[in-house]
Picture 1 (cartoon, rainbow, N blue to C red):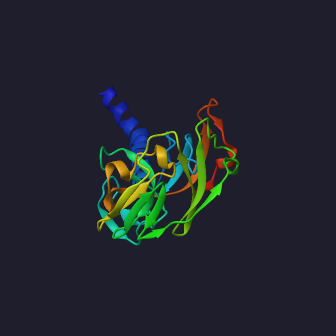
Picture 2: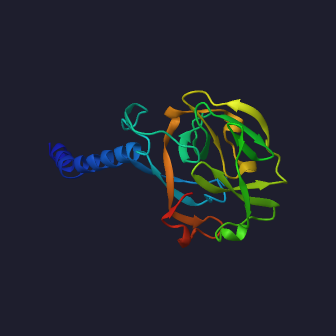
Picture 3: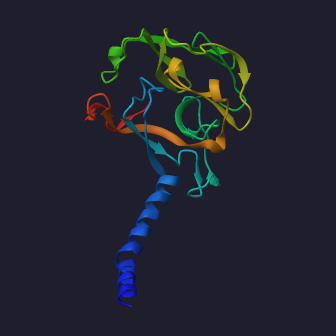
Length: 229
C-alpha cells in the first residue's frame, strides 16, 4: 500500500506535470517551430555542416500536431525558398531550395537553371565572401543565382561526377522541384524526383547557432541568429 501511495504522489507531484510539458513542447515543435541540425554540405555555402537551422512550420499552413493533416493554409512555397521536407525515396528529413513550382518547366544546362524557358542570371563571387566556409582543395566555383526574390550563392565542383544538365521537365500540380545550393554534391530532385506539397514540413529561415565540426565543436559566432538568403 505504501508503494502505491508513493507512486501516486510521484505521479501527482512530478510525472503528470512533466508529461504535460513534454507534450506541449513536442506539439510546438511538430506544428509551430522546430530546429534542424545539418550534418552534410549539400547546401554549401549557404548552410554549413554544424549549423542548426530554425524551421518556421507556420510559414505555409497549420497542421495537426504529429500528423500531415492540414487544418488551415495561408500560403505555399515560393521559388527560392529553403524548405525542410521528407525525401520521397526513403523519408529522410532534407533541407533544399525550391527551384520549380507546380506547373513550371525546369531545365539545367551546365549547372545553369532555365525556369519557364528563361535562363537565371549568375554573377561570379569569391569564396572569401563567406568567412566561415572552407572550400577545401577541390576546384570550386561560386556564383550568385538570381532565383525569384531570393538571390543566393550556389557552388559547383568540376572534379565531382554530377548531373549538371537535364532536359526540360514540367513540375506536376501539387509537387515541387528541389535542388541543393551545392549543385554537384547534393542528392535532390535530380535523383528522387518531385516532392509532394504534403511532404514539406516548413521553411528554413535562419541559422540559430553553428559549430565547427572539424574544430572540436568550436562555436562559429558570426553565424548565430543569421537569416538565410
